[in-house]
Amino acid sequence: MTKASSVNWQTWQAEMPATLMFVVRDGKVLLIEKLRGIGKGKVNGPGGKIDPGETPLECVVRECQEELHITPKNPLKMGELWFAMSDIPDIHCHVFMATDYDGVETATEEAVPMWTAIDEVPYERMWEDDAHWLPQMLAGQMFNGRFEFTGEKIDWLEMHFGDAAAAEWKHV
Image (cartoon, rainbow, N blue to C red):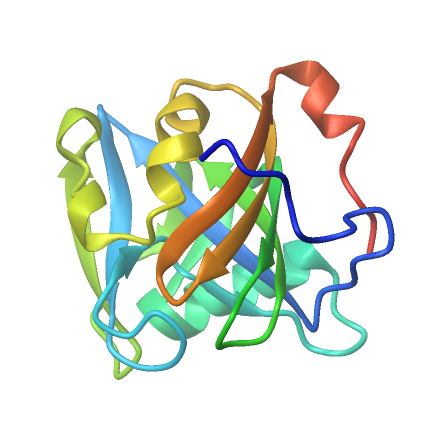
């Protein structure tokens, strides 16, 4: 991927603000198999579209409650992702991590929970971008990334890691 971005990221606006949550403990991460919506059939963290008037933090907690019947404790924002998509709305995603939660992870109509060893995350069943940032996030690094997709394939990407990445986060 040596081509230049075809998106003007300075003026780009997402059509869909969204969130993701990754609960990590004892060397494992809580993932889900999506049963409906964008990403149906893929493995990811719980999350979803931010409702009008809702903050990213409020959204990620609500989505965990809806999708898995858990409430993450002390979620920490770890990164932001910007997706210019070819066949679904463009997405601006706020990514959180937590180490504990209240409740019992439960399968719902939206998702099936799956605890996975961090060194066995099934990247081949996830969105292609996840392999570019999730390992670093699971190791505790903050990040941001911009991706251009055609269908489910990345055409262009740009990633930043570390504390300086947080300075680039957009605020919604």
